Every structure is written in C-alpha cells, then in structure tokens.
Image (cartoon, rainbow, N blue to C red):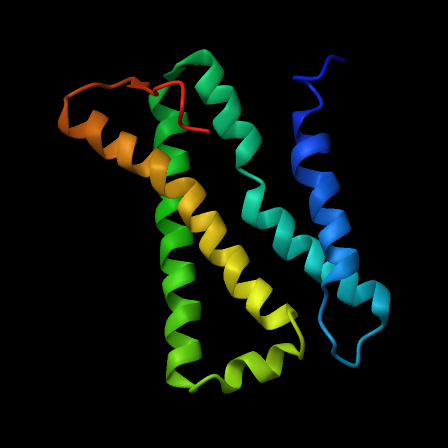
Amino acid sequence: MDDKDNFAIHYVVGPCAVLALLIHPSTSHHVVNRIFWAFCVYLEAVSVLPQLRVMQNTKIVEPFTAHYVFALGIARFLSCAHWVLQVLDSRGHLLVALGYGLWPTMVLVSEIVQTFILADFCYYYIQSVFGGQLVLRLPSGVV
C-alpha cells in the first residue's frame, strides 16, 4: 500500500479517533461508550472525503455515483438544518441533553462540516445537470 491507499487512515480515521478521546460526551454512560459515540459522530462528518478524493483523482464521476453523493449531500443538509432548528426551538436546552463541555458544540460543528464538505460537490453536480452532462467532471481543487 502506498500513501494514496492510506488516505482514509491518515487523514480521516486517525484524527477522528484522537478527537473522540479528547472531546466526548459527559453523560452517565461508560466512558468507552461515550468515546465510541464521539468517534462515530466525527467519522461520519468526514467519511465521504475518501470517495470525493477518488472522484477528484479520476476527474470524471459516473452518473450513478454522482446521484448517490448528491442525495447524500441533500440528506446531510436537511439533517444539519434539523439540528440547528431543534437547538433554536429548544432555546439551547437540547445542547444540555447532549452533555456538557465542548461536546454539544462539536456535535453541531460535525454536522456543519459534513454539510460543507458535500456542498461543493452538490454545486458541481447541479452545474452538470443544468449543463446537460450525464457524466460529472470535477475541477482538481474540489477536495
């Protein structure tokens, strides 16, 4: 395996694990459960990066893959909007239910990060649909 094959381990999984060890919920659950929950939240936020990198390197994205990643982007946007609206509706009380410290903020930041990671792809996807292309071509600076 070369460094390109280890992209997910070096730049996705490892940093998420370290972040989960440092910032996790302060609930009454066992510490291992809290760290795994945090790891899951952080990993989900950046899990699409390897796929976007593959699409960037090939420069051409097949329609089926493009439709899937676009649908994922829309779902993430709606999920992020849901969390933000829930926090606003509860006047911040929802954050207390998630625990104390940095954790509640990191949950929201993770949602926002994932939404912005996919937003750039969605922009190019919409451009390709309105341009009449069935195969999406990404510029080299997307990821």
